[in-house]
Image 1 (cartoon, protein in one colour):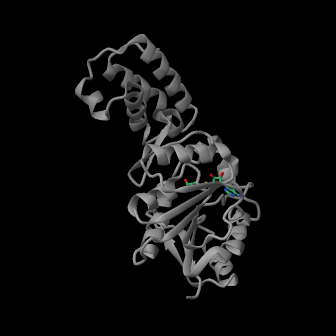
Image 2 (cartoon, helix red, strand yellow):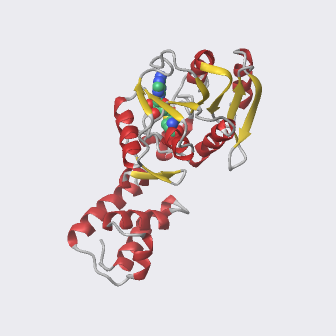
Image 3 (cartoon, helix red, strand yellow):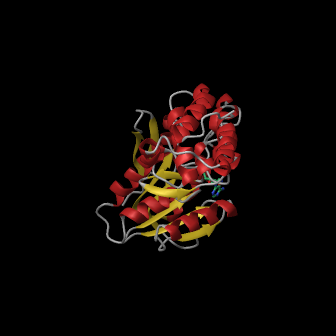
Length: 283
Ligand SMILES: C[S@@+](CC[C@H](N)C(=O)[O-])C[C@H]1O[C@@H](n2cnc3c(N)ncnc32)[C@H](O)[C@@H]1O
């Protein structure tokens, strides 16, 4: 029961409901209420004594209950920030992760000296990687492929909202819809969790699309399909960069070397985990 219907009282109630989720629960309470009221979080601290109307209280209570069961904040608010871009997300899209920004950094560094580079994002989801590259490189020709029509529609909508309309969005299975285009950098964050991993039954992963997360063969099946086909659509000297699980670096490096990529290396993410393997076609 919410007894104190002021902003401060409601936030205290929400925090008590979410405390079992740990460290970020106070922030979650603030983010959800700020989104519902369409205000900045600072508003909540500036006006703690403001009373909330019953309709807001009802919706907030429902959202906090959902969050208490582990449902992701990003699906409740419908947005997640990636590379400083506010992206719409739904349960049809993966929630973009901070570690994927490492792949964007690798792509941008690889394209830095090229004018009008062609970049491809395989499995674009909400459009995170493609939009980040297009936002940084106004001269880039960016293509984004996605197998899930609903996710592709979200990515298209994000591009429109952000005014990044130069991206070609294609529906299909990895490189299948590409035709005779060629790329200087191909980025992919494919599903890479083995279906037998216990982690998929707990936390927020339970609510994300399994087609965005799971791949057989120790999580390597889709990475393997991409590595075996993507070299055919790389320009000479172009590079492939794939995000993977922190224990998959050695396997992905071996795979890249086996398909003829050179200068193969694995980059670490902000947590210090091996996260992105990149390799280039000989020039
Ligand atoms: C891990 S999510 C990555 C989403 C987004 N790139 C990101 O980093 O937030 C993998 C994405 O690949 C898509 N996908 C899975 N299999 C695919 C396939 N065979 N062809 C194209 N996309 C696929 C999923 O629908 C999902 O959107």
